[in-house]
Length: 319
Image (cartoon, rainbow, N blue to C red):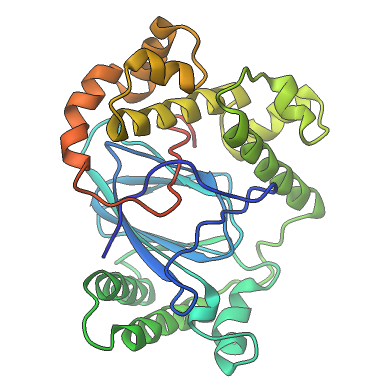
């Protein structure tokens, strides 16, 4: 069954997501997200992920780019790549996504790994693949991914073998169209990406405390100016903008999942002043905390959430 994404991603000190998608025997999970309620924060994991625009326009941040997917389009995100999904100020906007570990298709000692997985993990392979119905091979990949999503969601008889077949076919097409060597990142870019993952993890652990650029930059031994430059180059926002947006998404989750008072939620999420909390919430969500709770609480209670949660981080200006 598809789950709805939500808050706080458990991760390593380097920022790698620790949420297990699916089970050890069948490592895939599929999710549905209505982006008028949530966003998906900047994060990374060793799994492959595909995002399909199910309704309206979906905006994805990946590899320093802001990608707008029209309904029916998709993006396949490679292993280990930082990515995020924007909150949609105006709906409708919904995605369906699948997150699966490469070993679902085949372990490292199998021919499937050698032919389908390894080509996508080589240096120089793109960090993502845009998928459009206008390109025949991409349209075929989209069909396979949609079918895999529905199979995981509906769990018909022998669906595991069907899902493995569909994903193998999709990976085969992607591997066949890899422009190997054209997207090789420099050592400097790799170090910058690793530092960013650590800084995002630091914010996730300390968002309720007083945070400034100095504290964030100190966690990776960067100067404040280098920290500012890194955030602008990789995420398109400043560190403090990221902190504010992360706090607001944590607050949004608490508004829907608890009966806490609005002032208490603001304080728990790092806002010492309720008026400033309300002002900031309105800037990012385009409504007050009270209005947000009234609008979405009943609707979202029926949706399951991803185990371990997903923190909605950067909103519409985050990518």
